[in-house]
Length: 308
Image (cartoon, rainbow, N blue to C red; front, side, top):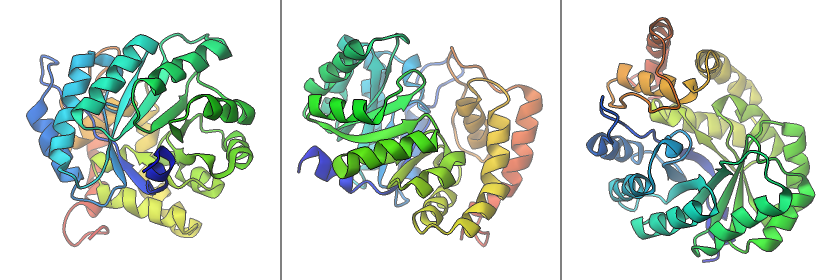
């Protein structure tokens, strides 16, 4: 199977598990295995281990490899595992080789640590990581990794394994231009957040990465189903009741996109633990609001509720 044939099958929702830590901030691999096993019971197209929500940038290469290995074992063949990498070209290539060894089937490349890279240096970063493994490459265009439609085409020419594009800019107008210019050369995915689902599916993505998959898998799948069917009436209702209130809390502080999800998991009975620096844990007053909102989310969790 070619890289592009592999990514053509990734439609719907990518589960995006957090990485649980103990109170001393060491890896909680037992909790990770339990959480991933539970998530893999649902029909996600893939799971992403050690991605942004998984706090990849707080881990060592050895820890990333271990997280991916445990995740692959917990998934037990039910779906592919995509693994994160980044930092710089040398470390990114090393991590790519490590996660291939750990059983990942695709590599998600986050932006390099240096935020002012010229085009040539940025392209060499992706080329080096792409050459490190034959696995399909997925680029996460977020923060300072901003591309024009022509640059995406040029990068696809230079990196033969590049097979998927995960948008993290949230600019629907630009993303649609990128997609229209490059056609079906790559798999197009929404990656900024569950709150961008209407924009992403209106633009024509084939799937999206979901933080909500950690707490309400049925809801994330329902959101994708409404999006792919372009049922915006149903989608608007789901967004208003569940997604927008959650993201309003997440936007109260930088880093809350992970810590709020971890608190939500703990409130719902799953083990997630604290976040590692440079993120910060949720403030007590905000945790109280998360707790109240999770009362509504239980509609998608408890038997007989909206998600049953």
